[in-house]
Image (cartoon, rainbow, N blue to C red; front, side):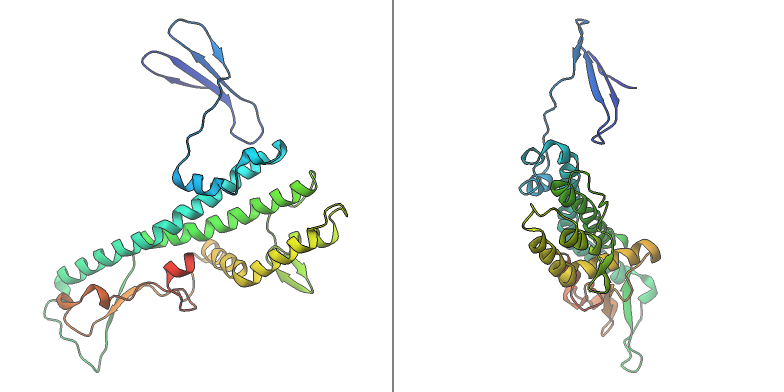
Length: 260
């Protein structure tokens, strides 16, 4: 039981969130009468609004609305994090240049063509956004797999976008793909088509994104991620913004383009 006291009323609520448990509110106005179970009215932010265009819980059957709501949240977090990558990177670039130009350790430094130098800037701003992009993608896929399976078979035991064997190979989402092609009822005529679409996306981008997310979870970094850096071809105080090399993924694609 939880309480929150205001200047003129007492609110009380109990239960859990959208997990299916009882969620009850009671309001005690100044008059002393009791109003039970008010109708919730949700106002959502711009990222949730964008996500709700394809994941509006009210457009789905009641038994899966909790999953749809969770999918919408994951998608909105993905949208938010993608929108943060570029501005965070620009802030990092400005901060990098400011620190480089003011750092007294570089006073008197003269570039030597025989000893090329590069200054690397390591900071959390853009890394936080990049990490959240990859985390939210995998979270979305795990809940999406549950949603798809339960829309077809209400008691499905698919609990995530887990690896499974497809044509003799272990691939991300393989268990869902195999379930769609071999275990769905005959009444669902589009199972093979959906499995094919998911498989195409796995090989075009999901496999790489999930593998990079796993590297972050288990090793704390993306191997061979190119950080923000600048080669010192001139005195540090003369370095311009366009000299700075912005982060790139291991395949050479700049981080902003990759996330979008």
